[in-house]
Image (tube, rainbow, N blue to C red; front, side):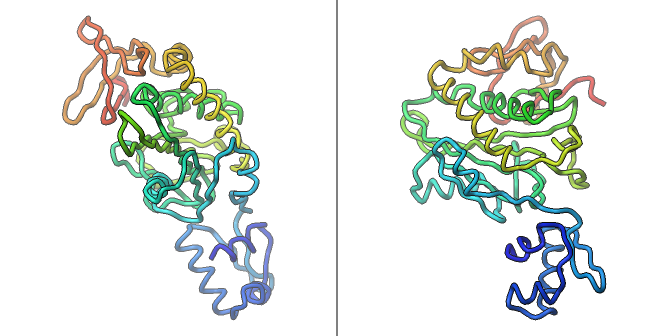
Length: 317
C-alpha cells in the first residue's frame, strides 16, 4: 500500500495502466488498492476518465534518512501505521533496544493522550513523535520533565510561525483556547535506579478538519496559512528537545521555572483542578521548582502534582 502512496504522492494524475505496471498488478487490482487507501488511510483520490487517478493534495512523507542525518545521534524509526508511537517505543525498550532512540509514524490507529483520551491521528498530516531516554540516577532527573518537553515544543512551534502559542499546565500547548500539541510521558523500569521514559508528543501540523475531535483545536497550517514540511519540524523539535533536556540534566528544573511561568497562558486565572470526582477551585499562582502547580485556594497557597490531574478554566463556557 505504501508503494502506491509513493506513486501518487506528487499530486499528479497517473493512469491505471501505469500504476498497474509499476506495481506488477492488474488495473482492477489497482482500483481495489485505491479503494483501500481511501477507506484505511482517509486519503481523497480524484478519478477522472481518460486521465487516471490523482491525490486531492500532494503528500510529503516522513524521510527517515533525512531526519537521521539531522537528529542529535538518535536512531530513527519511521512507521507507516502503528497503534501509537508510545506503545511501539515501549515495545522497543522491552526488546532491549538501546536508548536514546526516536519513533515516528505517518498514522496512529490508537493514538492516545493523557487520562486515556483519544488522539486523532490522520495519515501524513500531523506529527506523532516518541523519544525514548534512559534515566540513570534516580527521580531528580524526572522532576518537571514533562514541562521541559512543553518548552521545547513551544519553541519549535514559534520557530515555525505560531507566535501566539503558549503552555497550559501540565502537558498541553495552546493557541488561545485551542489545543495545538499535547505531551504524554510514560515510564518503565525502576525510577529509583535505572528506568526509561518515553516522551510522547503529538502536534497538529497540516490538519485542517477533524470532525471526531471533541475539543477546540488548531494546527500550524491553520495558524500560519502555510503547508508545513513535517521533516523540517521533526528536525527542529529534536534540536529543541536536545537543548532543553541537556539544560534540565545539568541544572535541574529550577533553572527553567521562570521561563515556563512566563509562557503559561493561565497564570493568575481562576481554575478548577480535577482529580477523579474531586474539583478544587483556585487561582493559578504558578509552579514550584519541581514543576508542581501552585494554587491559591481559600486564601491559602497549596501545591498539586500528579499524572491524573486536569486543569480547567472556571469561566469557560
